[in-house]
Structure formats: structure tokens, C-alpha cells
Image 1: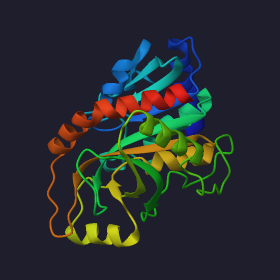
Image 2: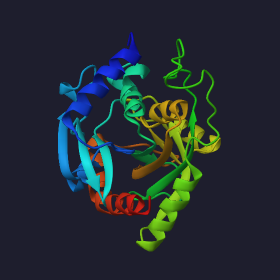
Image 3: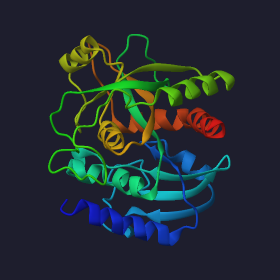
Image 4: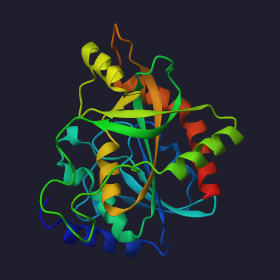
Length: 272
């Protein structure tokens, strides 16, 4: 994506022309997890297709719009649907919304996803707070000339998932009696699901869940100094001897868990 800074500025200007608030918190909703967008008060909805240079989500179960307003009294900008590398977009395009968010003044991001469980005690419907990730792919959204307006050439990833936000999320989950786990998210580009050998590799390397999103956005956030809380909804469990899952099953489980996830995110916002 040529002239990404100028394009991000155009998208920022368009979004600002539609709203009269300045959110400091953004939320990205994964497959089947779009129910939280319905809880936004005094909402303004903007279709991705209307925003200059924004990609358009092609995945079933993702609405493809920004919802801007307030939840629990906190002004937020919600992405109902995201973009994936497997859709044919470049990493710059996948992370373009993060670039726009940084120009809008976003300070914190809550990113959710539907993921496969790899840890031995995983069960469909588990909620896992991401404490770190593993990305073996050499493709990064930061490849190419660095844009100093977004961040430094060589950002570190030691605190990619903000420790204070993780503590808050666990405290809120305990208060609301929502069972959560904490683990490492393993990024695979997809769109195919993992082989049995790949699942075994992920487990050996320390992955607790696996999915096809989130990590590019988190890298872009680290580049721009945006604090991140990552939450995986475990929609299926990948056993070492068999791997069988469909996207329809993923969305069905995510829909089932969405009430608890909405309660958790709402509670986190109340504590912010």
C-alpha cells in the first residue's frame, strides 16, 4: 500500500467528520463475536467500504463496519470484523486500521479472536487471556521503509500484551465469576486449518491456542505505542491424534460464548 501515512490521514479525516467524540479505546471483534457492537450507546456506524482506503472484510460472521460510541460510559471505537492475510491483503492492509487508530489518538486496544485450543486442558467455550504470542512467519507488517510518524524502526515486543491490562482482566473475570485461562497464542497464516503434525509442533513450542489473526495488529500496536489486551475464545480443541473443525462450528461456539465475553469486556471498560 503506497503512501500509507497519507492514506491513513485521509481515513482518519473521514472518520472524524462523522463523529463528535475522541475515543481512546479501540476494540476488534473476531468471528462470531460481534454481539458487543450491539451494546454501543449513542452509536455511529460506518461501513468499511465508505472509509477511504479501508479494506473490506470477506469472512462470514464478521459485519464489516466501525461502531463508534460509548460502553459503560467509555468512548470506544469498535471494529466489527477484521482483515486477514489469507484474504489476499498485504500485511500493511491488514494493519491499516491500527495506523488509522494511532492517528486518531487511540491509547488502548482490546483485541478478540476465535481460536483453536491446543493446551491439554482446553475445552470449547474457554476464554483465554493472551499473555504472549509465537509467530514463525517471516512476514511482518513493519517490513519496508519505516514510517517515523508511527514508530521506531526496531520496536521491542517484550510487553506486547500489557501486563496491567491482563491483571485487570483477570480481576474483573473473578468478580463476575467468569472462568478465564491465560496462555500463549500461536499465529498461523491460514486459511487452512492445522495438520496433526502442526498441532503437535505448536504444543511442543509452547502454544496454548492457535489462530489466523491478531498478531499482525499487535505488532503494529507495539510499533505505535498502543497498549493491548488480547482475548481468545476457544471454539474448538485440536487433539494430537485428530484435527477436524469447520468455520461454521467455530462461529457457533463463538456465538455461544459471546455473552460472557461481552460481560468481561464491559467490566474491563468499567475499570479503565
